[in-house]
Length: 135
Ligand SMILES: [Zn+2]
Image (cartoon, rainbow, N blue to C red; front, side, top):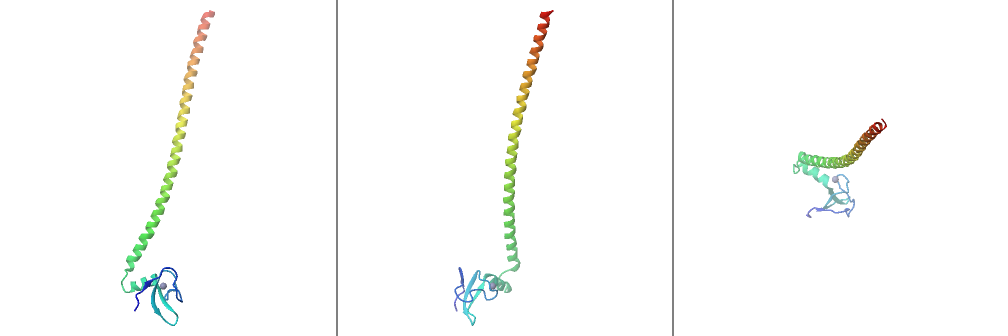
């Protein structure tokens, strides 16, 4: 009796697929033949058979698949959150820059205001001097 062998790529002999479910993916060659042709079995059908014999724990298998699914979902969620954080950081940086610009503008206006007050003071002084001279 020949050992079962895993097939990489397409099964070479008719009917080229799993005898139990007709899948053509993840096959093993049993090397058995009948009137139909070569007997191949797929990974899923072998797993189902192994589960019947208690060789594969059904719950454990389902648990692992759920964990894998969860990991995929949470990885995607992490990616999404990372992108969101990057966007928000860029936005905050732009806002901080705008605030700095506005502060500089306000400072410039305060300076101009001081100069105007000083000039107004000077004008008043001159006016007073002028008034005294005219008296
Ligand atoms: Zn199958």
